[in-house]
Length: 154
Image (cartoon, rainbow, N blue to C red; front, side):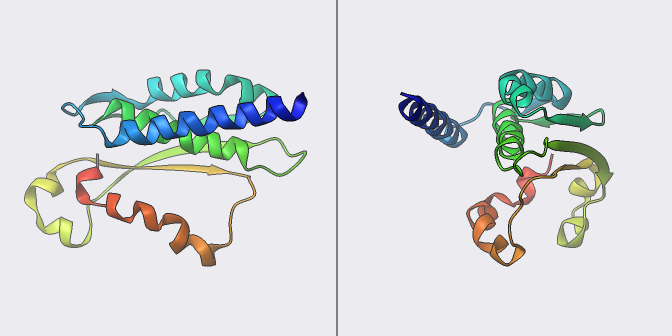
């Protein structure tokens, strides 16, 4: 019964992940002001059971209000925190740190006056989890390369 229950929970997580991915591809409404602090609180509530079970600590600086898509930002933040809680060392409580800094637009983008006038944030999410070998990073992040376009800068 325990194996069946565990399998059912894994299946539920897979279904939720599929729903999240399909909702990312749907046509979005206009960008709006999104308070990342509120999204973080919502995500922490969603993941409260895992946070308590793993005795995780989540430290964060006050996050900005940015112009973006609420649902996509929530899915992104939830996936990042969920992974930080999932891929941990045995018997080591997860420690997740979220920091933010203002950054300048660089490279070719810096030539565009409109882009230079905008404010950009770099949000770092770090954890003490198991990580991965950097020699595989190109494979792990290849699927996201198309998303790394200037339009995603918020």
